[in-house]
Length: 383
Ligand SMILES: *Cc1c(COP(=O)(O)O)cnc(C)c1O
Image (cartoon, rainbow, N blue to C red; front, side):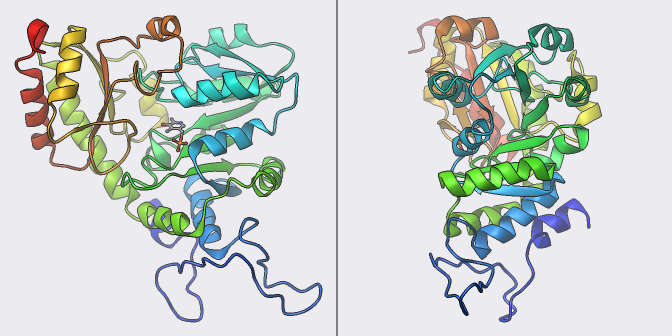
């Protein structure tokens, strides 16, 4: 079956009622037909039919052997880190989601797991950062918020020769545009709060494993730690997935149009969008992704302009998060990266002038008109 069909029918077979959509089973417990006999379901945390059909669909979409739905993206990251042991080290893209950096610093290091932040777009830099205790490479591509691209195939090839696992946070492109497990990665991670859910109305996370040995570890931890997605949100996430291909096409088409328009604006100094052919990493993007997604970061001329735009948008919301129907404009330095040391932000290009736009599903021309009025006026004394 092709991708769009899998999004709709992938993990679900109608039950005796013939219900064409997966039912929600809120029950916490399942009555046993006899001693040592089970219906296949025992307790809600371990597995329930609503989450199970969702997880089957997710495994098919990422081409993994098993998928696990979590109560948040961060819960998925935390569970993944529990597969490491004290003394282990990993390499991570130097431009990661701020919450992941916070978790690595605040929790993993305390548990004896260390990491080195490296520009994973530069394979030689990745090789130099390797240590004998390195166990994995953790990639985010395109990165957040500076949209740098890592060659998943090249990193995986090197990593596997060294016996390392490759983990990819695929939140930005989703399996519709990029399938890391097919490019060599071992584990895929998602904040399903973003594009997979797609409507700015649920909190969820996902891990997908390519190999049964990893799936087994994650299955045990998922049930043991208990940050599992509940039946209602599992149902909402399944519903969101059905329109994933349609939504991603529109997000990407509008983002392309808006990125080009932004490039022509005098107050816009830099536009970061993986789909711009003039980029150095465009060839890598083309070779590993079938689309460039709906996220654009852009740098304006001054801090005053940035603040003015954030406070002047009318249709676009000045808000955190991304990947939903409503367009959201974020100020990475003060929002997603608030807990990352300022110096670290500056070296990555996250400064007072950088804005990040999650292009929603509104009409692209309406979004452009909104950005145009927000960029107009303001200036040095516009506040
Ligand atoms: C939002 C996000 C996360 C964290 O997920 P939550 O669902 O907010 O817990 C992780 N990685 C990326 C790239 C994200 O955008």
